[in-house]
Image (tube, rainbow over all chains, first blue to last red; front, side, top):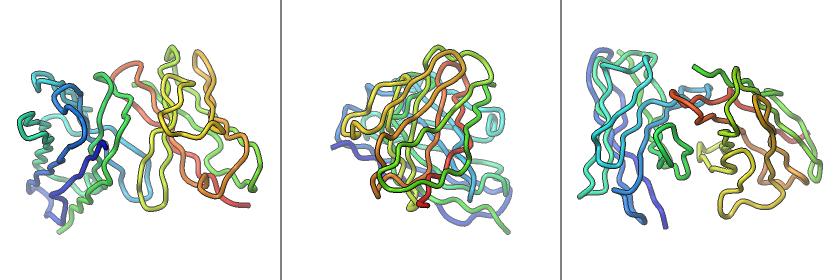
Length: 119
Length: 107
């Protein structure tokens, strides 16, 4: 059974950093693109980052480019999101998702982890 | 970026009713259109990929259609567990973008 479980969310002050993790199981992790998608409170879904199977290619929207870094450890079947210079508008639930290709159809999602950026 | 416009934003409906949710792209997306369901607890379930292909395990009362810029999700006969939020998403080009969502609620 495919499982994705995020961790690392919490309350953080503006300008600080936070690192999210996603533990994957039930499939060959290294064969799939992986992504982060977020949802601000009472808002819709927003794609945040995608990483290729080997980790050699990464993709970001302008809203997080230069502040967020997606990475993966295929030996540990784990996905990460390093978030720096956090802003209040980064407050959201962050979902880890398995992607079929770079731009995604996201065919499995984790339950999400909440990040609150506030002083 | 390709903008995705969903309608309606809210859809009151009754058990057993047939409903359709629409999604329009700001430019042609060549059937690269996917649908997701989100329950009130935040759980996101993929439903349909590439316009009309059902994700494994999704009931056959769900169907998708469309072409060019206009796509739709139809539920043929509403069950209690279908009342949720629905999002469309295009993966024709970067960045992947989502519609604003349709809240399917019990009338």
